Image 1 (tube, rainbow, N blue to C red):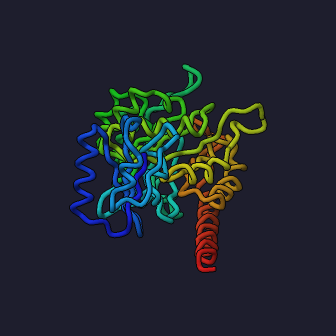
Image 2 (spheres, rainbow, N blue to C red):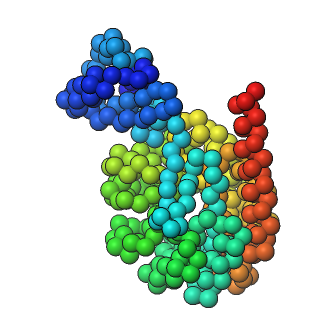
Image 3 (tube, rainbow, N blue to C red):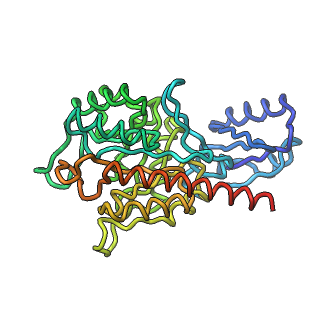
Amino acid sequence: MIIVLKENPDPSQLDGLISWLHEKGLQVHTSTGESHIVLGLVGDTASMDIDLIAALDIVQSVKRVQEPYKKANRKFNPEDTVIQVGNAQNSVQIGGGTLTIMAGPCSVETEEQILTVAKAVKQSGATMLRGGAFKPRTSPYSFQGKGVEGLRLLSLAKKATGLPIVTELMEVQQLEYFEDVDVIQVGARNMQNFNLLKELGRQNKPILLKRGMSATLEELLMSAEYVMSEGNERVILCERGIRTFETATRNTLDLSAVPVLRRLSHLPIIVDPSHATGKAALVPPMAVAAVAAGADGLIIEVHNDPQHALCDGSQSLRPEVFDTLARKLSAIHKTMRDLEKMEKAS
């Protein structure tokens, strides 16, 4: 249920309303916009009398939310969520009109490799360092990542460049090693690992939630709801391609997900063109299209020697190619922002 308050509601009446709702066993999510305050109610609202609430002096309107996801719903929070990552010295904003570029190798291999790539992508304008330490692979015989040692190497690269780290967590038992990780990634295979999601909801770190290979957008938002329902509302949605009948690409990048998710949810949206296409030559055009579609950022694989990469070298960009792409993305993002300002002014 959503309660939209009139402008400048009386503070004592507002406090009284919230206290009364709490007494009814409901969670109250308060969202303050430019002109109105919105109260989002989570819990059993079936017995709540809408007419009784609507008759209150400070209430403008009341409506029931039909969608099963509540906290991830834009109706609960009309304003876009902005997530701050990192510390005061190296803070990165995700959402709110900025373009976040997460770049780095699919898998951390050696100290030389991760330091070389981290320094290169930062120089090109990347704002976060991605890299896999624990790697879920389709084949049990494929390289599974360097594990805890990979996290140590990521920390070295973070100290050398100042770039915040985003890397994948595969199971709850690994959490103790993620102290220096800034954003915890949930991979496509774990999107509906609900026990893992609930545990991440009790952590004080942003969560990058990747869409499952066969998941609908509603299922993605319900997975976000699992995290948010436990108290952690810093969730970032990631479109990384879905499995279809098409074989020309590794997956099918569903760029329509960006405007659809923008309409349904207030959470930031990241696009992964590397895993979606599986081919380095297709990453730049799809990254450009993602920015034009309104994505808040991209997560792109970059490797200094893709031919000898231990994981997904075929979809990894060389640093010089990434440099050209990053400059193009920055220009396109600025153009899109300027067009949005013109539309609002007209």
